[in-house]
Image 1 (cartoon, one colour):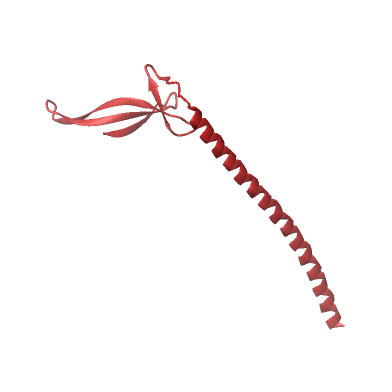
Image 2 (cartoon, helix red, strand yellow):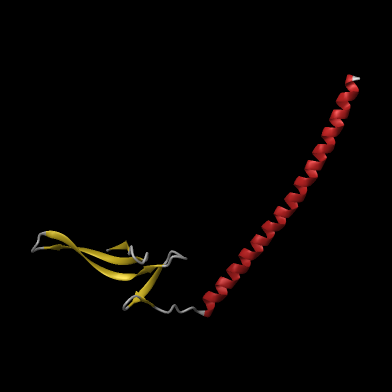
Length: 117
């Protein structure tokens, strides 16, 4: 068995089918049976199960999944905050180095002028 993706050109929805090949003895050709599994969600890229005439089943979200997602979000927020702090400190270091570079360039020019004189 394999998964087959088929895009509906009118609606733009990509459906996913489970395909099973078999040999047709009468026509002496390979044939296949397809069974609809669901459709691909545009936002997540995951397969969402459908039932009946294209109605999406209501997903059951457990409390543990919600808590796990919240802790994951908090970990990402902490990581982003740390990276933003690091970027701010690097930006201040860059401005300090630029001013130091200007001061050294000025001193070097003054020193070069003193040797010419």
